[in-house]
Amino acid sequence: MGFFCCLSFLWDIIHINKHLSTPSETDGCQRIETRICALPDDLLLRILEYVPTEDAVATSILSKRWRYVWTMLPRLEFKDEGSESLGFFIEKSLQLHKAPKLDCLIVEIGPRCPADIDVGKWVENAVNRGLRKLDFDIFGTAKPTIFPKSLYTCDTLVVLTLSNKILVDVSSPASLPSLLYLNLLNVVYKDEDSLVRLLSSSPVLEGLMVSRHEDDNLNNFTVKVCSLDTLFYDGTRLKNEVEDDDDDDDDLNGSLVIDSPALTKLDLIGVWDYCLIENMPCLDVAYISTVPNPDDMFLRSLSSVIHLHLLFTKSMVACCNAIKFSQLIEFYFFPDNLVDWLMPLMFLLQNSPKLKSLTIENDFEGRLPLSWNQPSYIPGCLLSHLETFRWKGYGGREDEKKLLMTYILANSKCLKTVEISLLATCNLEERQKELESMPRISQSSQLVISTKMLWRFNGMTFP
Image (cartoon, rainbow, N blue to C red; front, side, top):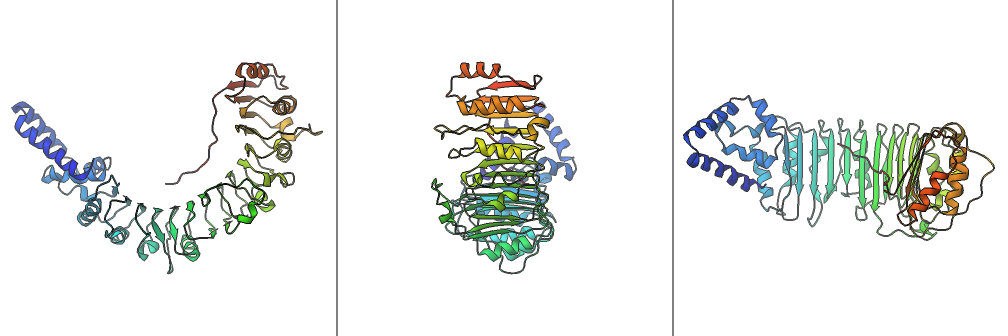
């Protein structure tokens, strides 16, 4: 509901109550109003925190008691709903807001907002009042907006989210001693030094979320933060079209460098350029999706993970035999549709002695023929650790049956749960009968068969 709609709505309520209510109804409303108005300011503020800021501002016309209550709100949120007056409303709201501290400011500005609005003045106002969380999204403007330098020296800021048409310009020394979470979503950078200064100014940063696009003005993206615990990086929009040729290396004209020794959670999507990961001895959880050009060092950097979700590409085949995953407990294996993946998977299982949970998702149509030569060895994880096995997208081809029947089920002594999701294009009744008749070395394991495709989880969220 827009601001002026709220005013009209509330005025209509007052007008109708005044003229149409019966005496008894009026007395009852007055008693309710008296009780509400008798509530302390703290409780009234708690009530207003649960309604949109525009509606909270509109309560100022209800009575003298309500006139200034909203001005003490610790949190203001302005979302663009297509109104050309939004900029004016934000400007006046910040001028009238009297709380000594503004904990949170959330602003979303769309293309209909006037170009002459002073966004920097709003940010300056909030920063000067002990701001703890800033979430700013600008979309549809002609050129990126520059924020005041005071934003990058705010000693109270804990969460910072900048989205879309914003220019990250950190030309002078910065200091964000309290910043714990930083989200940079499809913004533009003045230069690589601005990114370096921003990250180096955040000595306690724990979570970093990055989404990039091809016009963000950076070739090299470096994350060097000693305190960083969680990193989400999405470079999908850096490249419009995925190449299927073997000459992907020719397109490498930039780099992603990660040097964060405290990192425990890593999520990478769409890393088209050269990727160097180093110094991550604490890494526990990794989601690797669409990293088409990894080298041996990249995979070795993941060797300490406990939970690994991996989109397996052709470039990984050559080095998968040499990488030891000594701590791996949960493995989500998602092979690219251009990969002959059966034997590489055997190498990965052989190198994961503690593996307890294995999921294969293989739901591509028109896949390449897979080659299967049953290994002479049995991975230690099958003999002593594997408890859960899932296959999402099982089609019942001969190579798949051999892997499932003569290798996984026939050699897994500790299996407790087997979940098979069938491809909708296969003969469901025939596949189900085959699966139910398969011999299992672990007779106590539970077999669950379904036709519902369960999609892999990918992604992290920050405050």
